[in-house]
Length: 553
Image (cartoon, rainbow, N blue to C red; front, side, top):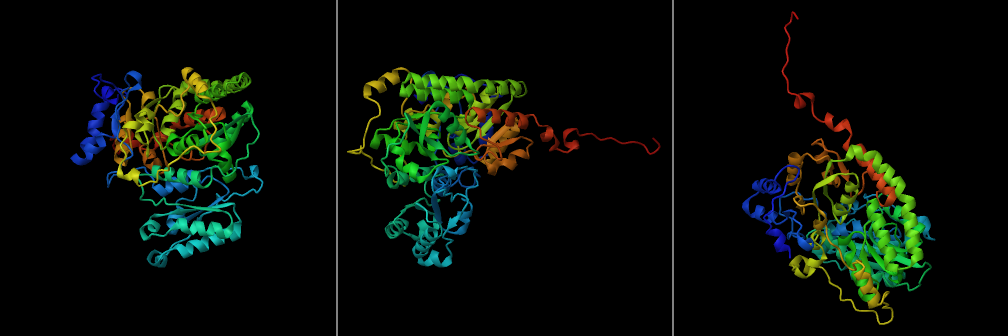
């Protein structure tokens, strides 16, 4: 399937240049062994028949010495998935440095007024602050004290414990400690073996977080709440208020959100999430595990959606309406789209003359490097190159390649849960006939087409981009905007290129939904048309000129 696209003889241009030659130049600086490996992770996109794309190597260890964008397993587990849940006390078991760097600096927003207890522990940083003594003699005693102290001071409904690298190395049994403290305190206490060195990136932490939430929380509350159209939104982390904007649209449409994983979330909503009738996946890589397990155990189907971009939002709402299949919901959704789109179109018409033809590059984790291409398309901007920090092949090529992905030692390092239908609570939300009818109408269940089939031929797809590669493609293409994370921000800006953070949005947002699209249009217009970038070079660097005058003149 992928081989046919790979063997295509057709030549493509990228911004007037030969992308194959650019790739050769990128690899030329590397030692042979490194170049051979990186060649499999830098792909010139070629979309063939039936959306066939070349094979890309991903989810493999970064070459030592290359400066990568990646985070560790602990960052993915604690920082990404569990961190945005406001009413769980998250204790980092390890040195204080690990705790500090996971102290939710990602601008996840939450609304504690929506839960009766008003708990919000997100602004706090809880750590066992391990010292030399605990590294040598073990830290379990100190962990017990930390859990007790957190309970005495805050009386939370749940406490989660996250293992850092030293904990794995010395062999502290955090799970036994959690079981003992759960029994002693009478609240939910559970642990994560998410030591930073596990897996090749933060992706391993997402998987571990999903497993433990599913084992210890999902399914604890069987109460079926109100609402005719009840959904879960998975992989939406409410950066800059994205989830608030999506909730506003759902409310207008009459769609009830049972739980969001994990933006603006609470542990009670996780516990009740299996009662929803449909799971919507935003960030495929970080959360598809929970969706699949919930479908197997409880019969809740899942579909991939995207609320980044006005057109994508409208398409996702129509997809949800088609699933539930009731005319009154379809009419309501169409009315909301008709009501919201004029303001979006007016904003687009205003900025598009200034953004049309500009070029972007996106290197962000999860599905963001894919989703934000929709917004740039709406501005008339082309994406020259894109890639993920921690993706697997299915995030690039689509889930159809899943059977061909070999499980390596790094993946075997992560617990794979064996899930079976719940004998009492398994309830298929749709009959097989209804599902077939929906599939025949074009709806895809448990599917994701990946990023590469939607990108133009000739664009460069780069997995786990290094700092050298980042700087080289910036110097080669001089894009009008570069999107990545905080670690790359100032390197990019020193090249005189505006840099937009898509992990935490700098100080902007929301960018999801209809109002978010308007915010994004204005922000990108301001950034790509600002004259400030022209002042980053001294005048003699821009116009080298030697001038002199005689003293008598």
